[in-house]
Length: 166
Length: 144
Image (cartoon, each protein chain N blue to C red):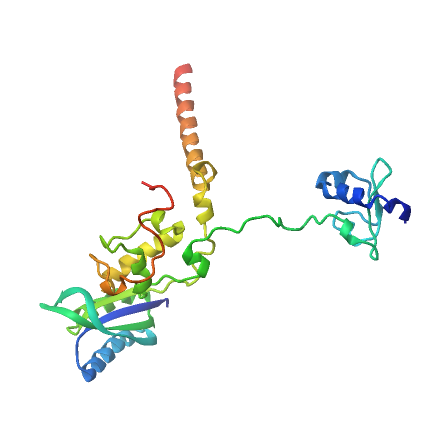
């Protein structure tokens, strides 16, 4: 145990943060800590060529000195999801109220994906289910039903999010 | 036997008449060797558009849902028998699909510029292959 070498703790810590996977492999490992994974678990020392202790590990002492390599990137942004995927809504031909939200009240046509903001698979599914509902006699073909006119709007058709796909 | 859904629209009738027609449709499924799992009443309401069936135009109908399992080769016969029934306006059989769809949302990938999309990458590779083949053929013709 090299307790005296713990003096420049901040410096060591700074060093540890910038250690790459490659440099770790290149270093001399003691006989006990052979693999990289054992590096954190077993209390051993690893010395660099400058004879300075880079990471001095023991169970009782500060494990916080060790860089955590398996940690996820904490600054990673959340994935963008469409409305149907986000809330896990199952699109069905019997649910006319949901389907009619994707139909224009002016023309009775289905809005395209650049307006609805759905992912490719869900847009295809919505299109299929609307056509199904119309053929099965659940939904009108030419217009949107008047009783659904005041439903909350999921998107603004006059300000599409993406450029026109065609 | 895969599971199917029969969404049926019946003409506007009195209650006992409705019961007899529903029994008839159910028995038709049983005769073909099917099993009924569930019957749902979706209510009577105005039709979304006027339907003209068996030389009568209808503006109102009562909606019912049969969830059933049946062998695949009997479906066309079943549908045919329903079409011949006078009380049924529109029988429609559809396959029951899995609820978890899709597994992952691909919206983020689609929003990226075309150079970063996987679908565009595939297209580019296809084109390159074609070009390579053409070039190879031309060369061989020239030099031999």
